[in-house]
Image 1 (cartoon, rainbow, N blue to C red):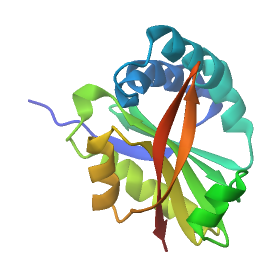
Image 2: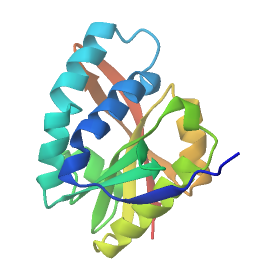
Image 3: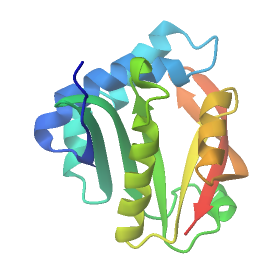
Image 4: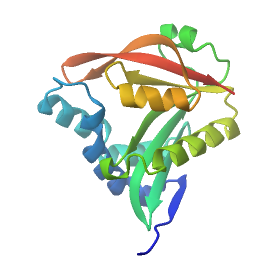
Length: 179
């Protein structure tokens, strides 16, 4: 039996299609029950397509990290460096130089394998290297597994926000980790 090698690092433009495929396989898993397939598909097309990943990869305020096992992308994380646009979130986060962990997904077959931990370590390192004094994220209030993971990684709840998926508004917790 051969061992796989996990490599986590910055994604490149050549990864956009594979990142879009991972997003398509994982996004619905983080949505609360009752999210319609039409709303999920619309969100994927608008925000997580290969074309959008191409845009994200070219944005100097974003850092897209990929986790690959034997060359196959099995997860990704995206950081957005800068103050939140929503003043209420900025107040809740209470960081002078924040970075947002805007996306972090791992293929279902890789849950519990250490991929998420490796992505989180890399995200924290890249946020700190970009000059952030902490990192924040939004997580659906029904996604208890993700909340436990973030808490185990050192995040604490500091507020709430809404997140639109198609026609539906979802309630998220805002969580923060200070460096």
